[in-house]
Image (cartoon, rainbow, N blue to C red):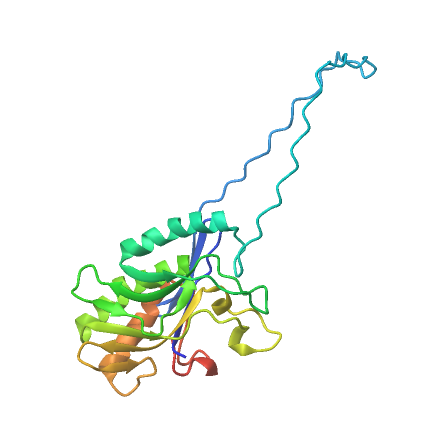
Length: 256
């Protein structure tokens, strides 16, 4: 376990950020929602009588409607049918590539719990740093929802990598858990579904530096390294709705 970064991806274009910055709790909702009234159908003219004789039948026999085609069953692990999956995958993957992420598209098998679903699952392998030489690897190849992968990649590129390089040494790798795991929160039977079960959370256990050092997120011996981790955790509130870590609960003793 390590830092746990969680995001609630809402389909109504509303994004919620919450956390604490400099000790001050804050919550912000940004987005746009509009309700569109459904227009009523045209009303029947008043001069048309209900007992008006029916129109004369035409000699032309109307063509029979073709039977409806059966809907294509959705692929395992997704609520999208294959055509939708291909279209949405292309739309979502393009920003990841622009960000510098190297990924693999994955098809999930069916899980025992039907609620464990990722619409567009992607496996992360590495991230090219745009304004720095080299790249950051993800040795554990976490499996995430595509939208969440973009947020996570942006956090590593724009916050974690520059911060670590400026104060310690260039960042070479981020050690994570598997990302997707079909389970409840803290593995509690009968509890609420974990964000890991839908690909919207990732654990961070350690950061590997170019000089060979490995910094655990539970680091508390080196004041300089601890300060970097504390800054990284607080600033993550700008990317994710929930940030857990050492001190949050027993399950996060050695993870963020």
